[in-house]
Length: 173
Image (cartoon, rainbow, N blue to C red; front, side, top):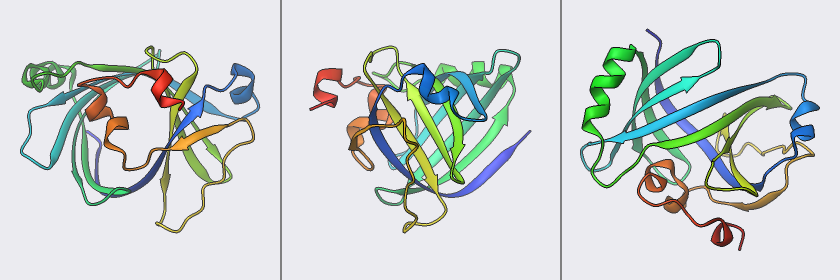
């Protein structure tokens, strides 16, 4: 099983949903369907399980995050079996629902980007990029139109969206 642990530094943006032709200019990108469920956890810790479907294969992960500040967190992630995933789903956090999204992952100018497209939104999506350090500048691809940065804004964390999904009209204002 794969395991990952360390400090994650990321920035998050609301973007206009790119035209399909936008991603087609990239030499390579992956698409996956994600189901993400938040579990009971101690205060200050985010605990989730994720099912990631690449079409030809499905992976399952358990992740625990401890937020350090608006841009960074300590993340511990491990790949788990389908059986472990189904067992952990029983501990879904009260008042939440599973988040479903399609993720487009690609590299542009040596930076990794993830565009999460949610069925609740028709015009916008969320773009995340993981940085090597806090001062690294984000080099956006030309087909990306940033509506606004939402790094550190709790309403746009997946954990918060599992309680209540933001209205798209409010997202764009």
